[in-house]
Length: 374
Image 1 (cartoon, rainbow, N blue to C red):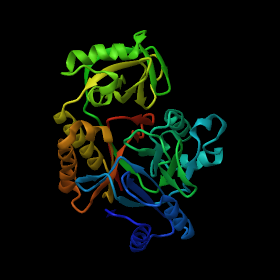
Image 2 (cartoon, one colour; image 1 turned 90 degrees about the vertical axis):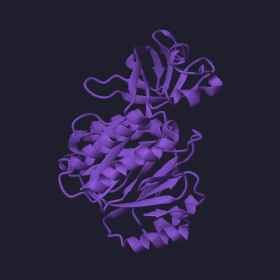
Image 3 (cartoon, rainbow, N blue to C red; image 1 turned 60 degrees about the vertical axis):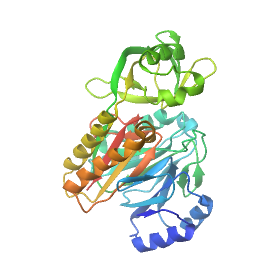
Image 4 (tube, rainbow, N blue to C red; image 1 turned 30 degrees about the vertical axis):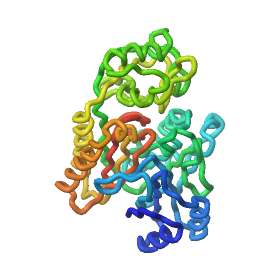
């Protein structure tokens, strides 16, 4: 369900029409330009004892359109109580799950899905996801993404029963299996390069030299415009880093700013001594990757699908510009061919979260994740 101009009253009315069961959860996906009293909404939802969570994002998706305002409501069967993890910087002092709860999850045998939302601008996302995966492993599949503002100003973006939160995470067990498709379509321009000095999401040195100087020397050879600090974001969106992965696509890292000393600030962490490529995108390759992800997800579903959800990186929109419409239509065309009664819903995120049930849990950039729920 999509509400283009939501108010607290219209959202509550919409929830009434959904006729939720006691074991269902509502997820609120807001476009960041929506004007609404989030605190007032949370208070009303708590009064009505509705199970809910959500976030605002740079954009949201409904069918073959994307919006920067409004709200998409999705409902799922709730497998277990919602977990709200505040202050990710203190993860070393917290325990995500008790041993009994871990055993409870491990009995699911991939019949459940962990839906994860996180502050997309937190520098502690990798720690959070590592703790989550170390606790639950491959006993479940994972899907989710990073909330926040396209301005890249960190602010409370997660909607929870405990209020609006930043530097936090939400974990929700959905009582349904998911078939995942994960692709990005970016291709290697130059590499390998060693990230010789990093901290969290900041790269200080590449190949033992100043990170920006090395990055600039490579990008300037290919770009029609020289990259500098004042035009960094506009050019760098076409030249992300790829963390080399054996036997699969690189994990993309989005450089979004250059610091005063030439350090490169990325969305998502990069470990020291990671082997990197510098990637380059072409619109046709990105659109094709979305088609592949949709096909893998839908055709991989074991039973009749009842919901299709996508986490699509906002930086793909910024790169594709007017052609992003083609990406969405390429996905919805595949949905129409296979499951014509379903409507695509999703988010334009600051980072994408997924696993495939066989490997680790990753935080991606510039990637599209499509989940088909049974």
